[in-house]
Length: 465
Image (tube, rainbow, N blue to C red):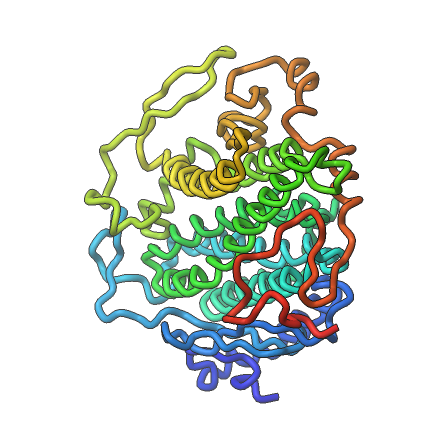
């Protein structure tokens, strides 16, 4: 096997014999995992996919038909900049780390493993979705997301195997052993153990959970460990497409629902009512908020101090990159009541990152609500309060209504069917999930896209079945 041809890269893989041997051992296990847990039923189909072949802005992606197991999962880092320095924390201004600093080894490995674990998890969550695709366009987009999550796994595995020796190789193997939702070997983060078994869930996942990925990758793209920063900077170019799929996907569902609302009863007409869309938004937004970690976190302070994980757009948005003496005011619950607490800024960086994420999500909702307004409807979709339905951090184990007001467990149980998808809601959505695989045709519950892929029309045969 010509490993360099099989794995396009800009990391001099051909000259690194030790890394080659590690990847030669890992690649067959990865392909076994892909065939077992990748998209079910479509492994031998030709799919019109984008493949990263270089890091050049005008030609980093190549579009062509390819069978997914033959996809060229490459290893790409943004080109290095001479004289790179650590951009924040206690070592601000010192030369960037080119190798793993011994005192931060465990922290760095934990960061990389946690990020890496999310990539195969989402493929596992979505493996059955192709069987109920609303159109060939959507089927192709699902597979594009899947193969790029696979490439992002390769990106993290490269770092583990290149920089962490035996420990890294063991962690790389473990990334293929855990399974989304498996009670014995679950994925590390709980959002990646939730079922994603219909297309409304998929669009919400790519809108909200992949958007968390954007902010985590953006914080790591600031890292003083230069190989991690350069890896994440390139990953962000692909992550944008995943969020596009979710944002436009929900917008197309909303558009079709608005059309059906004018014709009569949405359920009777085979559409997805707005209240069910809202409940799915509430579910995935709240679980995605948990991915940022606790509001008050010593880990966030340690990672920042060490120069390992910065803030979103650290260099662009901030002037004080030490952040040693600043404080942050956050809302906490004390004796069952909401109150304010001053926290050292470094300990509040998870919350700072989460705040940037929430603002970005609100932009998506503004687009969906414009679709409703353009249809002449007064209905609106809203984000729940960030305290609602939380399982990590200050608000875990407590109960809040959709506006963030404290309520009793009994009150939450009485009202949660208004706020979160019920079994009946999920069964109804699943009842609509019938595959539409004729080119140019689309399911009744979703509107067609505004444009096709890479200049192709919607009617193009994006997957050859």
